[in-house]
Length: 496
Ligand code: NAD
Image 1 (spheres, rainbow, N blue to C red):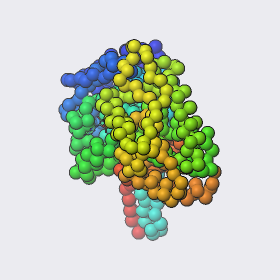
Image 2 (image 1 turned 90 degrees about the horizontal axis):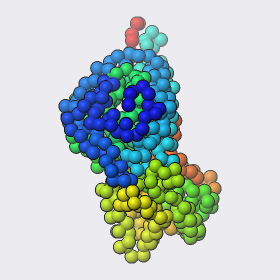
Image 3 (image 1 turned 135 degrees about the vertical axis):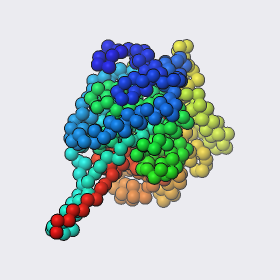
């Protein structure tokens, strides 16, 4: 696989090309150790990715540090144009990237992976147009004095992504960081690194060497070495709450800014006057059943008004039964696999606790695939839990699988209280025809991203981020670039 022509490249060539290498200074640099990357759908090893140690990670930081000095001097609009060109190159190679992503994540090519690459390219292109928005302010202090603020890049940004939507999360970090004049060292997820490497290398052809570097490895070795490196000026992390907390402490020890996008248990409140069909469709898309529920914003706590509960469950079940679970590469498949056995054990553990709870109902929908070539252990049927106590672990904690809790409610104030009862605060939605209820509930819900009558995924120009233990800071939007990838300098000039 050459770096220039990828149109006719097969996914296997991609796995071979990134065998045990990092992308440093726009080159494939061999690493000393490797770890296997497995296709969740088949259990077969796809390839070996770098298992970078601290020195290999530091080499990427050194490259980024050198490159950032010149990159910050490139006019902001020009930086934006180069980033936008990189985004278009990603879009041109979208099918190959999606094919690689489907193999390594187990997510279905048709319902998930193609869309993810398109959204990632769109986010990066959006940021490419924002170079001239890196504006400061002037302050009316004295007519013969000039007092102003300027927006400066931070330096080298450490960006760390998980496996569930690695490319969209890559885009949300790399787009604004680069346009703002920072350089980046991205750590890919060791579970699914290859699509990230491919997308990054495609982008590198449009960027100065060293501005974007990618390292792979475990969190404990490579991730720790990256976040703890003294030349890192900012950490932007998406992943689990526990790792986010640890990374926040690393940032605190060096007093550098840290953005965290962590977990969630997002409530969806279906009111008595809701459009039922719309709400059922919103529950399925919001719960990201086609991503096996592996989404931080998954609408995994659905509170349905008592008067609609039976009809809601019936229509939801009928729709879930239609989802085709199977080979992620098959165009007929709606739902692929869970990422790994560890995650399956977590999901099964939660479902077992629901099954052991008196009064609870556990219903599984759809058919598990029978294809002998597939690895049966990593497929899970969409599952609905109901009748659980409101403080049950399945109601309060993130499961990160295709398991949603549907609870009945009748008292409006109480359901708002229940919706706010977890320590998360990522997203929420309310389904109603009443403007009064919409205004009241959206102001009272403790979540960073609240929607009414929809459960849309990330939009490039709409800021997104959690409250509470769902994280710190925003992603997407101009606001996110200005607040999280620049620093504001005050300059006062006196010619009096
Ligand atoms: P994870 O926290 O285990 O790993 C995420 C990344 O962090 C990986 O690249 C991993 O190698 C790295 N890492 C692990 N330990 C590290 C350390 N000590 N130092 C530095 N890096 C380290 O998460 P995961 O299991 O890959 O992803 C699932 C989690 O991600 C879920 O909790 C989900 O809610 C969250 N998530 C949040 C969002 C959001 O936008 N809020 C989006 C997607 C996923």
